[in-house]
Image 1: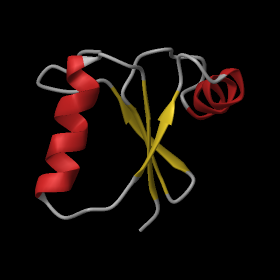
Image 2: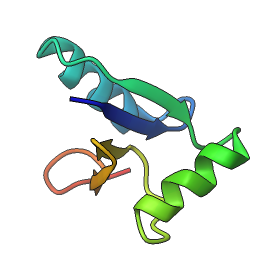
Image 3: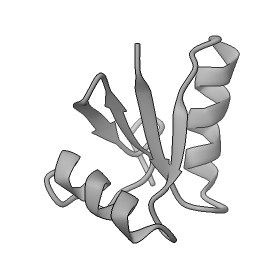
Length: 73
């Protein structure tokens, strides 16, 4: 499984997502969608323009944005 999480520094929901996947032993790549313009553009292309982080993409397919119940970000 290739999981990518687009995040921004200091985001508590992004940290919750990281903690969740780390706790389950699921490896992921973490990209800064706030300070890296190319990664932000990449994230927006997956999320259909939704700027909410964290944004999860698995095997090149958009999974969702935000974290929690209901998702926040």
